[in-house]
Structure formats: structure tokens, C-alpha cells
Length: 317
Length: 80
Image (cartoon, rainbow over all chains, first blue to last red):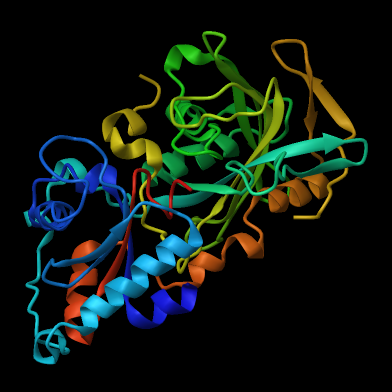
């Protein structure tokens, strides 16, 4: 399947939440394609699935079934439909797609990483603990939702990561460690300490942060140490009780982070509308943050919670 | 994922009075790595995914190829 897609197609991954809403040419193009399939028409309902299409918007295949054989079958059929198009209509350069400028895009539904900001990759995994330590949770019946590492991104603006390090420089030990700026702490806790292992997770409301403490200090070797603990609870439905620890290193010339790692480890319980199938009771959950490499796949993909952009950046409100 | 990480020796109490482990530096690295995707979980990233549909259209037109669009609620490369 990997070879089939990589060799025969231009592969693109996209977030339907944005594309079905945006009012610019990109959104219009996507909806034109989707309207040729079963998930069509006006309204805000999902259009998610796998599509095969031509560059000028003719739908050649669609399904929303993740079963290997059915998806492979759809792709092969779509490839036959592509090859049935007259050669002069599908040859390189036969279709013209104009450039589109930034100011033509629908700013309400386009997210770009903050200039000179920091992008962190965020991974979440269901764990099990035993006498001998932690291991990945592999499910009760084999290949089931929630057994893999889930991914997201966290964005920090330039002034935010600078303020974080400035706070760290004001303290030199765990005993006198400084509080992490509230806006940043709330963003990390509310929007990234979530159980995303089975799908789109519910985020935490401000009043569901029952208690938290996140501090930073500068170590003798110049690096920064982060410590913290949180208790999150949504009306008895779900919760997360965790400790945090982390380390930041910076480039001596630019002062930018060269390493930015945080680990949140604790017990999670409950589930959300799109994350059904949680384990019973409280279960170990780990969340790891790391600096996104410049060439990391999907580096510019926005944080899941930034669909509400203002709320994401002003997480303390 | 067969790796097993030793339980931490140090514990603190959270607001509910439960013990929650705090990792030391060696354990931090091990658990931090354990949580990240294993090689077997990243095979799909061998596909050179683009994340801009319009640019994908342009490239498809230029190369004379069809587009494979993976469209999900929650970006496949950011909420999976």
C-alpha cells in the first residue's frame, strides 16, 4: 500500500475540520471534489475519508473504510479510472493550477506556526505498569484503538519561549524554582495533557484544572529543569493526575532551544465523545514533548486545539 | 513494543493523596522514548505526505499524476 501510493500518486494529508469550512478557493475545491462522493451537500458534517482525484478536481475514488483490502481495492480501481483518461488530458502540464497567495486564503481557517516560535511534537501513549516497570499497552484483543502512540504539536510564540527561559534564569534550584508563565502552563495542561490515543480528545476547561504547579529553574550547567504536577477532572467523568518533569537546553549564540523535552506521567480515567473505549478505571498514561526537527514530517500541522485559535493562545482565560 | 521501563524509585503525592511516580534522569529518557512512536508505527510516514492541498494540485498537474487525499477530522499528521 505504501509503495502503491508513493509511486503512483501525489499524497496529501489534510484536516477536514478546516477544509469543509474554509471559504477560499482551497475550500471550494475540496468541497467540489467531496460533493461528487457520498459525503456531500451543504452543512458542517464530516467529509473525512480517502479520496483519489485529478488535479482539476474530478473524483476517481473514495471510501472511508480503513480495512486494508477495501482501501487498496478502491485505490487500484481509481488508478484504472485515471489511466482511462485520455493521455493528453493527464500528461504532465496538461492541467494548469494557478498560484494562490496568502492574502487570498481564509484566515479564519488557516493556521501558520508562530514566527520564530518553537514547535514541539507531542506524543501520547497508553501504558501499563507492573512489578518490573512500564511498557506500552497492547490492548486486550490485539489490534484495537488506543494501542499506538498518538501525535500532536504544541506551538510557543517567540515571546513565550523567551519569557519561559527568563523565568528559569531567575531561579537556581528546585527549592526556589520560578512559576512557569501561566499562559504557557495553561496551554500545555489544558490542550496537551489529554488522552488522544483513541481519536479527537476533549480538551480541559479552565475550571477542570483542579490544581497544578509547574516550575522552572536554571541548572549549574546552564540547562533548565522543569517540574510540575497536575490534577485535572471533568465532573467525575474523566480526569488525569500526573507529574511532569523536563529539560531545556539552548544554543549559546541564538539562545533558542536546542532541546526541549517534557514528560507527563500519571493516571488517566474516563473518555470523551470521540474517544470511546477507554480502559476501565484509572490507567497509566504518558505524554512526551520534544522539539520538532526542521525536517519532521507534518512539522507545520497546527495543534489539534488551535481550531479555536484565540482560546489556544489565551489558555489562561 | 516490547521494551519495559523500570518503575521509578521516587514517588510524590498528588492532590488526591495518591502516589504518582517521578522519573529520575535515566528513567525519564526511557519512558520518554517508550511513549514516542516505535518504528513499526511510523511506516506510513515513508509516504512523502504533503500537507497543502493546493500545492499538491500544482505538483500533480506538473507531474501528470493523480492525487491521493487522506482527509480526516483531526489532521492525520497531528491527531492520530
